[in-house]
Length: 150
Image (cartoon, rainbow, N blue to C red; front, side, top):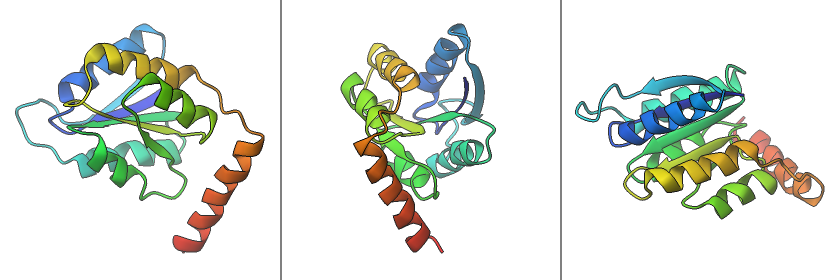
């Protein structure tokens, strides 16, 4: 799978770990955002990059990382067609895929450790969307976007 991943400076070390982890699993990784943990980089720019990659079809899924995961998830969710879920554990990652067909995962580098992040990423990357009754709500979200993002 092709995955776009970007972070601000706070998320840089975790982003590098996750990008390497995904590459070792055979995924194609498009990286963006901060170039180090020492040089400030806006989570807004990082979230925009991943959202555009997913919406333009350059990536099938996206992962965004900042200090808490909050700000960068807000940025991603400003894009119609992006369903970004901030996850702090594997169960949340499973549910965001099964029930919400999330296409972008957000994580907070100052909130979770590398091992937890890998478990979250595994769930996000492998869990299918259940469809069925959940499709109704995903379609409702799409209709809301059409109304609000004219």
